[in-house]
Image 1 (cartoon, rainbow, N blue to C red):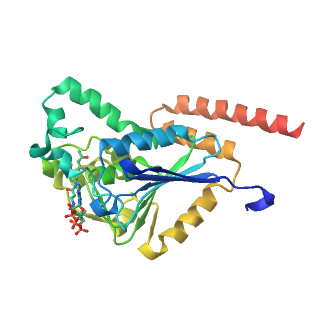
Image 2: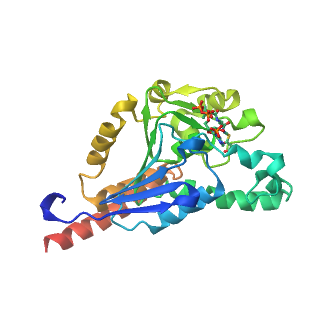
Image 3: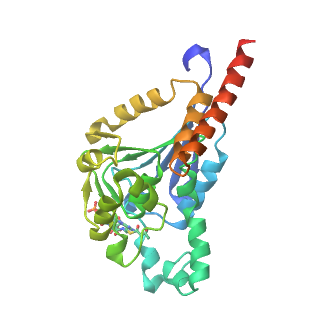
Length: 270
Ligand code: CAA
């Protein structure tokens, strides 16, 4: 029972074949990568399930939490997909590579969809990172608005070490979070970034011992959901698009959003 005697909507959806568990709890949706035996390695079925789940969220969802089960956020791309001996299997990246650049570009666009959807300003997304966040795992964390990271977590942009580039929407938020030079150094060396460093360089907004992540998450969610939903959503939209606008465009966006706020507040007073 929530405050004011309102019944809080709670629901769990299993996308078992995709290794995803989705929990809706009032204003908070949680996407749990749930294949701990493979360190929550990612594959196309998971991405499709994530995209479908996010699309299904209604206006009541204000916060989307992304986390991994079993003490690891995500070990990145499922390496079986890169195994030449398994090229006959559905979703093999080896088979995709043989289809040529246009097919590859179109297919990766599909794979990128859940990563893009996590930046939808109608909700605030939070990655809760413990254990490892490697490659696609690091990018998944980067696509969230905020990162809550365990101090002993280990993050790595492994793609260049495997002869690949980070292609799951992680490069832009990485550059925006830490700047071009630091982003380049992290990616080109494919080195480990500790949770403690992530906090220091602006990659993580909250750093805490792994045992305290749940408490820190509850505090963060409490803060993010305490103010009027429409005002927070409109502010999220303003900030989300700010870097893509000129100052004059941003000023106009502020005025336009405020006019909508005034209109709604005036209507509420009458
Ligand atoms: N894909 C598939 N299976 C994986 C996996 C992955 N990425 N990472 C781990 N697993 C599996 C292991 O094969 C192992 O399975 P079995 O028990 O059946 O042998 C199980 O998970 C446990 O793995 P470890 O024993 O290695 O666990 P650990 O806790 O000692 O180490 C780890 C964890 C550091 C994440 C280590 O498993 C690891 O380095 N994994 C590979 C990470 C990697 O290179 N990912 C690809 C990044 S690049 C990318 O993501 C590409 C892209 O976007 C384009």
